Length: 450
Image 1 (cartoon, one colour):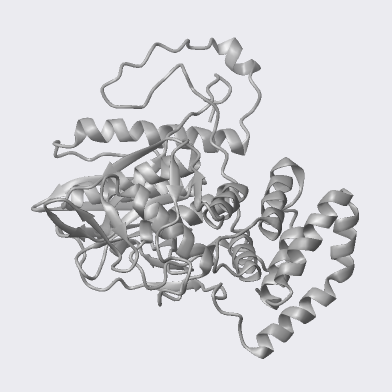
Image 2 (spheres, rainbow, N blue to C red):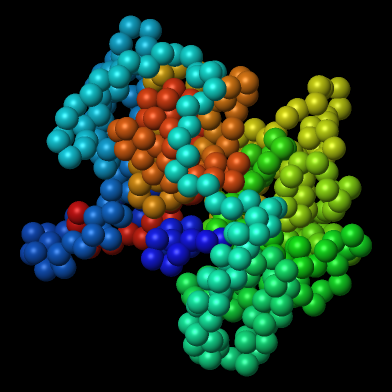
């Protein structure tokens, strides 16, 4: 990796779910208990709102809008939404019209959406395309990586001096395993200088990486290759790529896990690389290394992905049987299936992260799509990375991680190993399903002052 510190984008955001909110619920059909209304004197005594509280309030309102949409679904009415991207919806013949207000000039734009999903090839614009994990790079790139490591040697030494002797030894062992891959060695140094090994979570991550330098591995796994590939993925999870396999659901889930819980991601790789080839997920279930996934299978995937993606596909498809060689899930008395559906994606995310997700699907009409698209952007702009299914060029679907957007563009992490953006108009036409992290928002009268 040759991304400098100053220009470097932090792709390892740890998104911590907010605390529980027992006094209220935003689920349709469930009664909300009464909330005590503060007096005027109590309100004046409350602290002035901070930006964090304003953001919390916007998130609260966006989730409450979901219940409101469900009640208004069959109504031919304007539906104002309380969100950062204020919008209004109304029926327009057989289609649906969305009016948005936003942008620096506060201009208004109308956009008529057809009822069918987009099936033409998606018009993507690449925002960032990291180095391929499975490619050591050219000699010039390797030399540049070595030069960067050398230039930051004093900073690296200073960072190591602040660690315990045990951690310095662990780091040294991992660094030794990356020496044959200069770009991976550079990534490891970047992680150290960025503080990825600081604190309890950082110590756990370093411990998992060090374990791979000491563990007995399954026959056929090259230790240095495995450690190097894993380090590059953890330093920049956007580089995690499905390559030539239809594992977008599994791969996008891996990216989310590597961003939010990097030590857990490393632990899964470590378990699947062991001679036993199995490891427990966060929910206690076990995944196992699939047959013939250690050797190069022609997919151009890193060894980490050959271990992880097939095992996660096998778990995600439930009772079906996944074959890495054919990239299909086989089921009794039914034709083989490609990929995973929305329900299976939700199940996989919950098992991997130990968190609760709520799936929201859109029917094949513009009304549903416009509402779901707005929900996805509300959540993404509030800081949540949203696992989202889009219709794709072959009539099937593709799973991406939406990170934000506005009236013009929607940006997402593509499990092809890059960050892309798509026009808001095309996103609204293609969105099919999304998995939202269930809100467990803390509640107080001060927090509702927005």
